[in-house]
Image 1: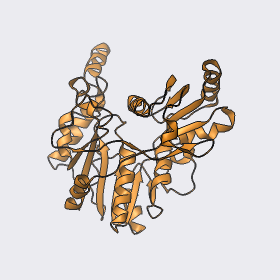
Image 2 (image 1 turned 120 degrees about the horizontal axis):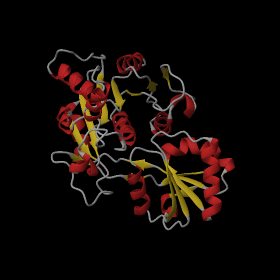
Image 3 (image 1 turned 30 degrees about the horizontal axis):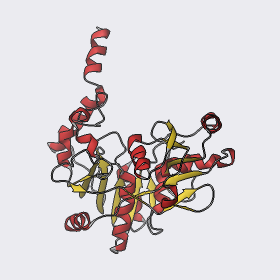
Length: 328
């Protein structure tokens, strides 16, 4: 009997059954989401990660601030050590998680960031601080809280049939047809996946690079990375292939790739292996993502070569801005 159950679960994982039941209950209004008391915008995805939610959250929040809105951002602080709910201030990456630190480093100073797994509680904390718009970073699957605008980001490669399968057979968190719940669908990184077509009826956004490059050495610009040779790339994000495409776009010559799980926290052993790789392959520089930078830069004194981090940005084009303003 136990073997039969194991086979059934392997063919139909329990988390997928839970998702189907949960969505059914909300879709049929058997369960009702809780209204927070302010305008709530959810920025999410339907895949396991790597669609650029955090850069988009930054771009959207800063745009709304420019429009005179009082914005707060709610994130769960994924990958942090410890638990609890708190307003992000001078917390470390270990306390807050890598995405929260990236948000803090790039959002307008007027935007409070609250860290909580409980979306309703966190939203109400931000409302108490005077926020009239709450932006949820990664909340498409969290249906307990009512959202006024549901945004889903997709990468063009997710639109290939082989990727339109749910985990563990594919990269999706839930069936692809559930994307119809979204008010706004954005096909992201369209310039990095030139061989793929965008989703019909979606808005398009390119991945762009900030001129500023984070550096453990002297001040560096994105143009100065072009043509860089003997590079070690270090990457712990949801879709490492997107990062490699970015390096290729910048004409950075990578001779060694180190790929870690998403939200990876670098250990002393990891750093020792990086140092060995630098010596073995005569590496001249390390290039990583901004999310990896907030953790890897803590070890910069132990690494003999410069560490550079590329900062991605989303410039909201007129079509995207108008879509949000119509719904607000």
